[in-house]
Image (cartoon, rainbow, N blue to C red; front, side, top):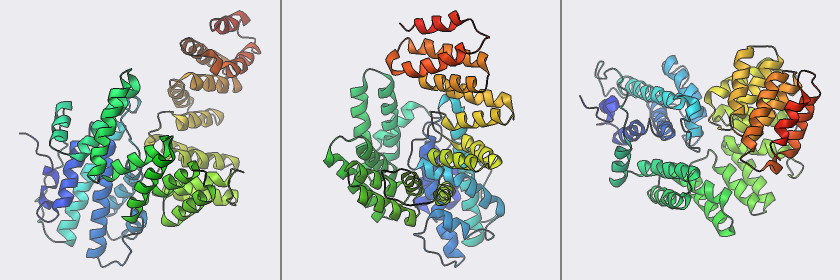
Length: 446
């Protein structure tokens, strides 16, 4: 029997058609663009949470961040549903502002989390409509049915039918193709055209993506100002996460540092986790006039991670734990971060692998994580080689160094010369290698 999108939430369609529509969008994109699914699930979870708050007569400003509204429901909704909502919340928040893709190394991890979110949305909605709204009867919701895999032609059909979320997904497709091929101008133009279509139809994720590109990439003052104006519209509509941080970075690019710092601090008050992360970083930089103690900076990073996971906050907070001698806390944070991170640089994997080796814990996993990091580029291979030499694992260090040399043969050696020399010297200090082997590899670079 052919799958009908939204079947899992069909019981709610007569009472909440907009919620049902969001669920259909979420199902359609779960395999090709799981970050779109997660971002739509954030809307679904927030909508249901507000409905539950009203249904239970709990007085809480719905303009407050979702994390606070969810905390207010603990003990009032089934504990298992609350736990699952709290677990997936940071990933849904992050997906609203970053294109979290299922890269090959993730082996379907993001899609699996998105599928779990779809099932959770079904359970949460049914509990609300059965228990609070009393609109559905027990047994009217069947077993959760995962949506089928869809083809690229289906994606194109949805775009031609005017689906702005499908247009956003196709925009990312063209952007990724353009980054890998020489025909990048055609794909760049297609990506921008599809993105603008979604922006014109008010898709929040598309507006954030457009404003982010303008703030970070525009080489024109007017382009950065346009990005800030798009951000202001979203803030006026009640959006918070990442917007104050983006706006602050925009003003920073316009060389208006005092305004940038004011906006970032205001974002901390509004509950923007990325603004908290930004303020904590700026407070550690002599170029900014923000006076915070190390403990206050760490608290901002912690508050940031409670609202939405982001790689930078996890990296800095784990480093702070290590500075304080809190190795178990650093290991726990890095371990969790690796599970939810979408950073293709694999920096958190590298940090966790290094810490595991230093602590003599699970060396097999540690070396696997370092190996994943070293696969990224020449720099990562060299960094891995240098670390392995530092802990006197010279054979593995030599392998990483050799791999870096082979990769650098097709790149500009001048970009890596000093780091190559550092690792080479460490290897030459070790008596286990013939000096000729190491020098031969370097000589291959000319």
